[in-house]
Structure formats: structure tokens, C-alpha cells
Image 1 (cartoon, rainbow, N blue to C red):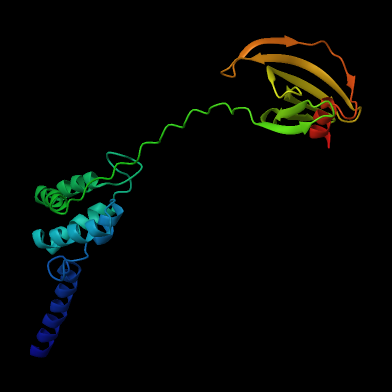
Image 2 (tube, rainbow, N blue to C red):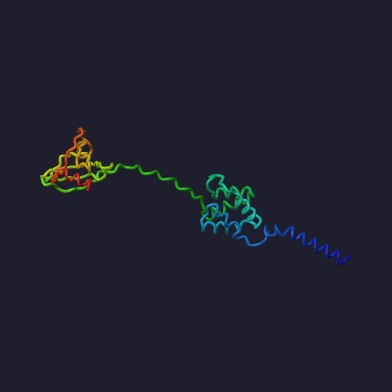
Length: 232
């Protein structure tokens, strides 16, 4: 009977020990590292994580640390910003565990100079400015006149090309006039569409549109230069 009684006591002792085993870690063991993963998840960098973790390990018991870790791990969305978790959320979680835990989290964050990193505000896009003219000199004709094209205005549509041109006379002087020419590469004709006179600042001072008039391209002329610049 005595042996049987001792066996029963032994079995009961093991059962009681087994029932308490799940909580033993809450009271003993190393404190460092208990909440490290959660600190990182709540937006702390490596230095802040190490510092805050060490501060909490000295101010909280293993049981408090584990309760904080469990509560923090259960939170998936921020209370103050649903898109991210921050120190403010961790402090709130700490207060829900125990007021003392929330106070310890805040004190650790202050001691480690940890702070909530605010997301950078999106920078306003710079207002797109219209591209300025890009005049390219195309060379001189037999008459001594030269032609330049504004490369930024070139448009293509099947056999048709359009662009603005500027002509300089044989003496090298410019009149301030620019011309919109429509070139038919297949028919080898040019249709002047519009003339604009620019002031000293480059603004349009006057303009004139022309009726349709397809002119044959003659070799050796500035018109031939315009034609070759778009169709060759």
C-alpha cells in the first residue's frame, strides 16, 4: 500500500509539474530578446530595437515582457495609422497589458531617442514646362540663303511631314519670321501653312495662314533643303 501511495503521489507530482510547466517561462529565464521581433515590427531600426529591448529587460519582469510580446504580436493594423505599426501603437498595447508596461515602453523609447518615423509627404510634381524651340541649322542653298528647322515641332503622318522652319537671307540677317511647312515626301511638294513673326522675346507678334498651295521642290533651293531634312 505504501508503494502504491508513493506511486500515486509521484504521478500527481508530475501532473502538477506538467500543468505549471507552460507558465514557468513567464517567471524565469533571460529577458533580452523577448520582444525584439515585435520592436522591429513596430517600426524601430536596429539601434533603437537593441536599446529599447535592453531598457525593457531591466524595467519589466519576464512575465510582463511575455505578456507585452503576446499582445503586440496579436495586433496587425495600427491604431493611429492603419497602414503601419508605430511606437505609439506599442505604447498603447503596453497600457492595455498593464499601465506600468505602457509607462515602461514610453520611458524606454525616450531613453533611446526612438521616435515615430513619419512617412515622407509625396513631393508635388514639378509643373511641366513646354519644351522650347530646338533650332537646327540645315545649311545654305545656292542662293546663299540658309534654312533652320525647329526639331521639337516635327510631326509625321504617312507620307506627310510638318515642321516649323526659319530662313536666313544671304547677308545673315533674320526677319523674325518662321514658317510651318507641310511636306509631301512622295509627291515631292511643299505646302506653306502658316507664317509667324516673333518678337525679341520669342513670343508670337503676328501670324498669317496660307491657303493650300502645293509647290514643287526645286533642287538647290531652301525648299529643297527643307524637303531633304524631313524626307531623306
